[in-house]
Length: 200
Image: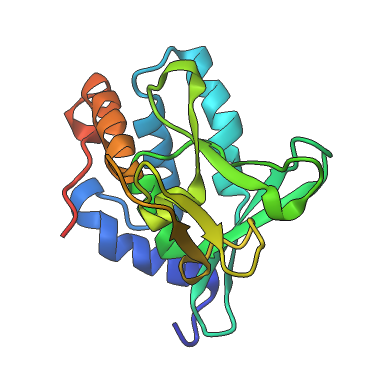
């Protein structure tokens, strides 16, 4: 990634990973594709609403290189309890993996009783009843029922893969599989051009 800006590095990753399945070669093109995929089954007024939430949040995300030269992304949110601006950080490639599970809604942050360590970043499950949301840490760590995601440094906004670990005994379907099942159902409604490719 030497001699590249964060945006150039992101474009290179997008081109390598998504040109073949989606025909996109830049981050802007990928953001457009993700939004079309997420809204193709919706009425126009609902699609505009999604564009104004999750679509806007992705476009306003900040790309940067971490101390070890890893490309990261910072997602801006508002603390639901205090109204304070907060940002969650994860590796750019991890963020792409999350989007490709179908978890492409807006990230939301909330904490209990003002204790930052008890907070969670959550995202909506596509096509779920009662607008179900799951913690992003569970997606990153591929938690199953019976497991909870925790942060090594106690900061729920630090969603780098190495900072997320699981506690509890697995007993059931994993979070990613559930998300992918819902996302594939949504893709069926949207049309074949929005299918999710199989991962290697």
